[in-house]
Length: 286
Image (tube, rainbow, N blue to C red; front, side, top):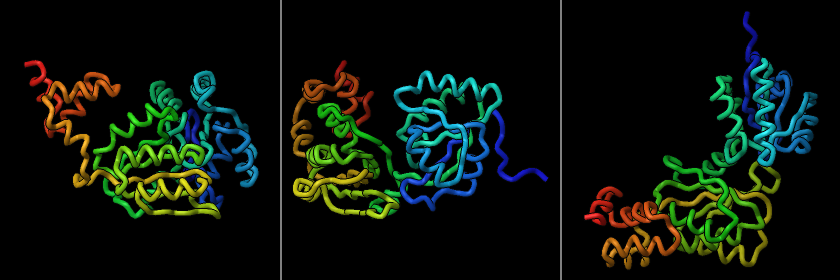
């Protein structure tokens, strides 16, 4: 009889780990972490605590954002030589807003089998309890720490009608929420999902305007997943309305003056005007 869930050679296993509650680890995850030839971890110190709690003693190597090129090549060489590797991140699913994305790409290009051991994911967990729409959503991950770049990123998604998912650290939360309120409008709904599955788990459902006031008076604590309501089409954007009164070329020029590349400005203006980018491009070049 074939062994159930056998750990295969020359295979990269993406192993989901708990995002806070150790009891969320799966039996299959424990088996793979125990039996893989080695484990690659984003933070070996953090992962060692998890493995110790599970009674797992296995070779642990470092793979993170700052060493991913050199470390990734070493991991790939070992996989090509026939070894199996379990990849874990600090918490949750590897390769989601995580340097694991790069090693997965390397392995697929080299013909190495990549297998997933599913489990906890902060983004999906937060979405499910947010109280906002779950049928269609977009994961945006961490926004830029640079204010002008962050504003540009928010401008790109302000009219997206899908529920938006962001990650944010406590020291950046106030600035991010303030910029979101400016870009999306103060009435847009948002759910703050903090410290999910931990003792201090908190779900705060509010609007961006109310959130700005709340976090001005209260210190953000813990890691956050922000679930933002998609654009409903009913919000009044005075800036866009003013743009629509301009000739198409001036409309595009306004966005270029804000720092957008020419084609991005055309795409944005076309969306404002309810036409395709190619239609607007023809008008501009007629």
